[in-house]
Image 1 (cartoon, rainbow, N blue to C red):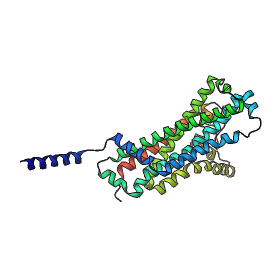
Image 2: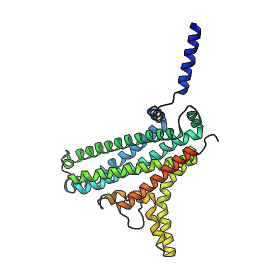
Image 3: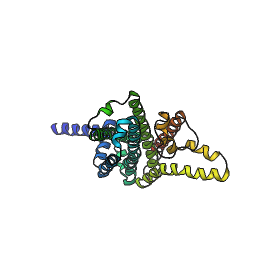
Image 4: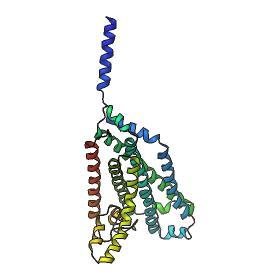
Length: 305
């Protein structure tokens, strides 16, 4: 009787384990664990933070930096912080593209996605978990990048002027503008993640997804040159107007439009005048297209081939 009871309990336990499904928080933790154990993640992070530090080392050698800090502090901080945060946006974008392609595309390339799905994980649940993990990493990356910039600019000011009075004297409008600038970086990061996700799901391979995602923004920006040439050959405004719907150029001028011209363009912008509402709508439309594409292909397309 004891043997029968033990056998029955074992069978029930096995059935219970078989019916269990991985929880969403558990999936997110698993993705974060995989990200943290990839050497490429840490190598890219070190390179990114090294690139962030480089401009501050160069600024140390700029002639007249003390006079600029003491007598033109507002202009100095707008120009320097704008350039340094632009580095965070651009190179942070490359970091997120490579990370996203690795997290999503590598599962397809190695075939491990079939094993995960066979354990009861839903396709969209897995995609959502991966995106959640990437977004969390992006927020940590942004926070660490901003903190590093704050430490470096404070160190620079302290070494040059002997105190931090210049920073303390900055107006409230300056800090409000910096918050808007950070918001523009977050929007850029968000649409970059969705773009890399869509490319990875379409390509179903780390190699294809990463290549397509890395090419997107350079092709977007270089496209404005070809549109200029087309306009000069045809004298047709269509070629100029179409650049108003390129994603990369719109992101490049987002912060300038949000701040009403207080900062410079970061990269080529559209060849026609655009306003902040237009730019935000373009980014939103692209983000929705990328998201819908990734969701539909993940949901509908088989992963057994």
